[in-house]
Image (cartoon, rainbow over all chains, first blue to last red; front, side):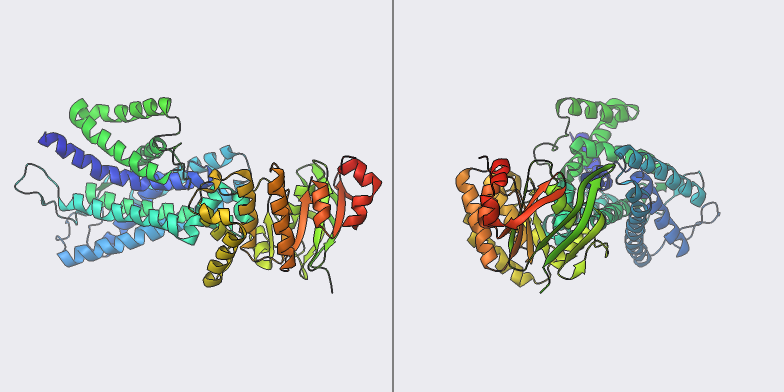
Length: 313
Length: 239
């Protein structure tokens, strides 16, 4: 029972990370019905930028150089985390919005396939940028958050690292929900997603709203990329693909275009991965994820929350 | 005084298809003008062209002294100039609440206090919307959606209101109610360009009318003259 609880805990923590990435897929799909295949690779570039930042300020070693720098003081670690949590989201937001303007906007009027193929192209470009940036080997991401157990005295492990994931991802999702539901721009996003022509008749600059959607999705990927690096302490140019596939699956599972659905889907994927690797074996966890996806889509083609509360964006 | 809206030789279409041919019409300050015509004559294209959602290929659309075509004014800027539309099919945002739909109508405005008052005014005009304000727009009946569409367009405080088939698919008593509202709005100073298949209702409320046939204006006169014109009666009034 304790073991089960432990793996549920792991599943919830990793699941909230997937959820954060999944939101970027689902928001963009909600507004322009594009599966942004480059989103996972954007996430990877975010973590690379974060790594570059900690190397530059001397908290982490340059990859390949022998002596690791001494463990940073708590103050330096907090500062580094804070810097990364600002820089990576800003970088990813800007990059995603620029790509929308430069790549997707020109083909907006063309058949949907044009944009999808463009997204696959951007994905490769991003991946190669990553390859060029830090090379093909996996890199150590500094462990700035201690691994001390917060549930000492019980049989469960819930470390500062786990806490960090929750403390960052949950407010980010709450903030997003609040933003989309109550702010003028958030309402304009939903309006543009539901009826772009009517939105233009209201005076909404739909292209600007789409850019903003890309920026927000990118920012969430940027947040996720920093949390991912600090949590797993390994990053590499291919991490975007694997995590992108999980997150995309989460978005589809929850009902693509649906914000609460993406969060729920992320949590489900996290739980399936954690429990699957425990009870079915690590090698089965991916097969299990996609088996569940197929089964759910067979019975609910619109995803878990897809039809009932279809809230696009 | 120059007309509020002065359209000259407007040409528009979709891809290889030309829809509007040298269309000219005017709306004076304070007027209700009806644009009548059969299905596919180009009425909706005309309105969408005025709102800059459909691009004009040639001609002029001078609104309130400004040429929207020459100035390449984008659709989202047109509203700001004082030209709002309640489009065909109502185009209510189905999963926004009634209140949020109204707020979107005021998207271009920054005077938030006045927006709140205008929402109250809209509720005064259509009390059913007040009762339903927290419901999703898509759950309203056709007549309620039409009321919401008009109220939403009014939230921009337009000088000119474009109405596309406000009577379409509505029960007769609702149609009467909608047209009463149009008359009342006009009394309050809003100019209206009204597109209708229900030519009789439209010409009864309008000052002047235009007849559109396959993308061309074929006839224009005072509304009561058109109402009594035997050709119009035969073609559009079912007599």
